Image (cartoon, rainbow, N blue to C red):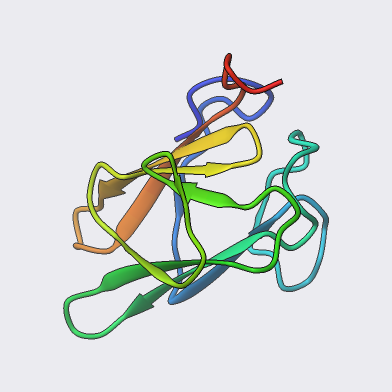
Length: 113
């Protein structure tokens, strides 16, 4: 669920492969058009294996992708309660009742200009 900003209250569940970006691209399943620091095609979260592990990868975005405040350079496993930063948007990884992964997004990080 998005906690604030233009899309407050929106809940986003992940598919087996969920691409995230700013522009309305047919390959982007999650569009975060309100954040100018998110690339048109920014990142992908892939759910793999019987354990439903979520893997985040940056898709050569301009400003990068961070997990728990550290920039990722290669596909990175996600854990429950990890924070993901795309542009100035924060995503929180939460468990779903069926053990897949969903995330919450918040807009506007005060320490990013």
